[in-house]
Image 1 (cartoon, rainbow, N blue to C red):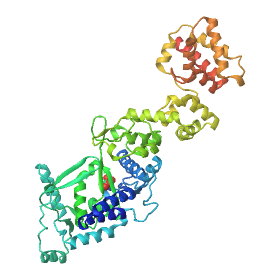
Image 2 (image 1 turned 60 degrees about the vertical axis):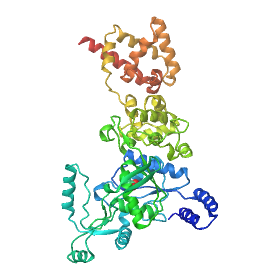
Image 3 (image 1 turned 90 degrees about the horizontal axis):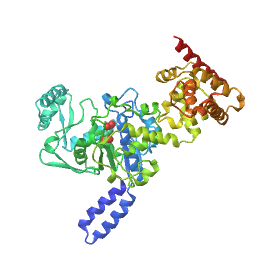
Length: 521
Ligand code: GLU
């Protein structure tokens, strides 16, 4: 057990024995509360992806550990083949690292209470399974799992609680020995209390009561030797000296079972806190149809880890000053479970996109370019460094995610891009536009290619507009369509300068030609 915790508990016991020890116990409590080593674990199954809900759980564990100068431990719960995805644990480790949540102990870096993969700890579960059996707190169950599964399904259909009928609980030792000798496979069940209730003191939702009637004699070790989640989890949380179990609300119903296991093994339980659910905007369970759900997908869609971690922190926690944009360091400085709401959080796509846009604009330009480059390369765009910087400067205010960069910049790389249909149709209706485009070309032609910059282009356009007695917009709009194929975008003169004189003129000619031929046909 956590040594500080043990000292504190010892002091509490002393209180009853020695007169006047009350004060001493109180002082000691204060001292040990101060030095108590907080140890928090994130315990994912290696499903091959880090789901956004699990990432939020990991984040709150990490924030809590860091806010209390504690340790953050990663444990892989890989004893259930159904929960073990093909991709294994790697995407989970990568996702955590990408978000910047470094762990102090884990399967990849070891630690004092390893191994950190449950599949490597089977001997420990068997050892504690034997302890429970020998102490009489558990018993072997010889019931056929298929028969029990059928009964459970029947109970559910009939609207009854699908509990075990405790058939094997009262078998005599002799009968058990016979069944064992006959080679009958058996599981280990906990002998759970049959009446009364058990209380979970939850750090977020307060006192939660569970009736023992709803907790049957559940299985600890299956007949094939695999521990159940509850058993392995309780044994590991104890052996790994976990001080606080922080996990999703879906595990709240497991907590009374785990408390019964602690009690049967004589282990002091850790403290528990169950985080609120994350729901989709329609208040259903968040799933693929609502968009990205795994960290890998967020990454591929060009979300920044800074934005995601900020957003995930807001899913259940609020900053005491009410601010919504803050760094992990700031969240750590203010983090406490008191500020975690027990009610469900609703996932808001608009908000995460807004936050992402904020972080994207806050990045230094060279960093933004560095992060955007892989997205451009995936589209086959490979600009030189200086050009990439210039391009990113032009579009940074117009994208909210990095994966929007290739679309936002495509006309800098493509030559035969199509024209926006509506924009083209609108300009087609304007009499004399092809001639006006010729005039634009004529106004730009005298600028030397080396001086084809924003100031020179703007001056040429303003004097053309003045000469013709038209608004600058009358030439800016068609020129934008000519050079980018679009009706909206970054500053036109910036685009033209970046494209260079030759390309700009070629594109103006191309639109004039396209309008003339469309008018003819
Ligand atoms: N392996 C469990 C899960 O992935 C962990 C639950 C817990 O934190 O106790 O949901």
